[in-house]
Amino acid sequence: MTIDEIRDNFELLDEWDDRYRYVIELGRTLAPLPDEEHSAANKVQGCASQVWLSRRLEPGAGGEQVLRFLGDSDAHIVRGLIAILLSLLDGKTAREILATDAIAVFDELGFAEHLTPQRSNGLRSMVERIRADARDVLAAAS
Image 1: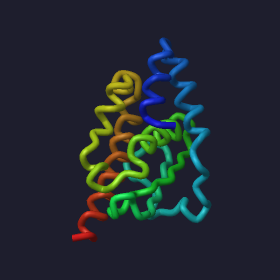
Image 2: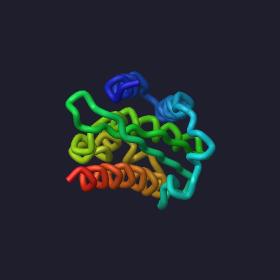
Image 3: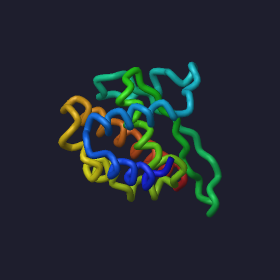
């Protein structure tokens, strides 16, 4: 599912209860994270729930590597947030990731007013983890 499809679906849902159910459904669409990827190295710090993000590099169309991510959480709503985040950033180059304001996209969808402070902090931690991975890839390439 693309971020544009998610935006369109969000616009169709007037009530936040329906939007939360949709986010949970999105979380169910995540590719499974292999057991060995549920590691300390992949665990995202700063999240109230347990969250894991793993990355791998693949050759991109323009010769620049793209980052591919898998994610998981023990909380249904957080799995949905991961699904939205990955729809936005998975398969992008490090430069594209760093040029994307993921928090602004979540704010545009209305999450700023509808996530608890703990969930908001966790979301920022996930975004920062992906941005750090992108910075690491750029540093290794130079």
